Amino acid sequence: LRALLAVPGHAVWTGIMGYCAARAKFDKARPGLLGGFVFAVLLHGTYDAAIFLQAPLRADGNDAIANGLLIVPLAVTYIGWRAIRRAAKNALALDDAAAARHAPATA
Image (tube, rainbow, N blue to C red):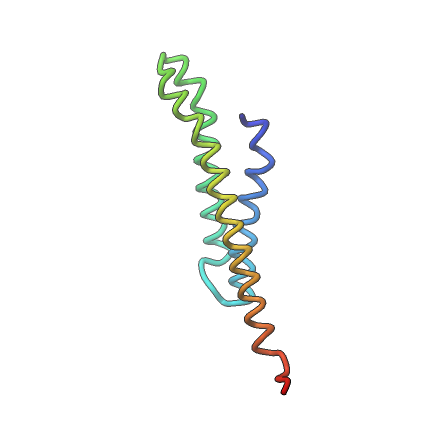
């Protein structure tokens, strides 16, 4: 599971951080780079905890909990991917609106 989701997960977390940093720089919007970093760290930590808790849980005989945690990395990656898609659409709409405001009026 980790081998399949590590690259997309890191792309998602980096995208979230980049989006928040760009919004802060160009639109003076929050949460900014620090907020994006914190959000990315929380997602990454949740992902890692769910994966790295597998072995100790199985060693203690908690196979049901370990199996239930398998959905967490999938969910975190999917939710992050959806958030990035929504953020990209929002950024494009903001860019189009800014371009329309600065375009010369044609009669």
